[in-house]
Length: 132
Image (cartoon, rainbow, N blue to C red):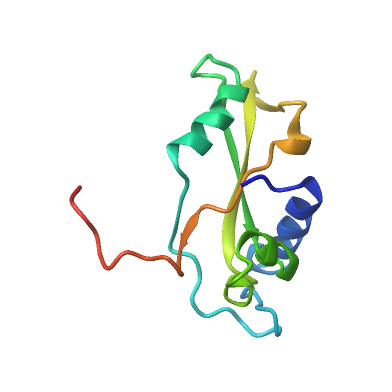
């Protein structure tokens, strides 16, 4: 799902104040999150959609991933029925980018370029590893 630049900045800000500094993430009530993200799944359609915006050279075009946390507001947008659970949960937000001369060149259409809202564990976890 698309993430607005404003929402991205608030999610990144929450992460920067808490987890990036080595502190626990905080839930809606300001309590420490005790069961953080194990993994995040994004479907092929989402990933290929971002890659289609990047340079077609496989050594240049790619996806930039950001560690973030759901704020109360963004959790309500992404998971309206489970916003309380997801507030403070670590997540990834990503956007298309190109690598030129060992520096990232962000693609100019970034206003609509942020994507997040993948399937996350917790709260959608499989019972154990599979061999498929």
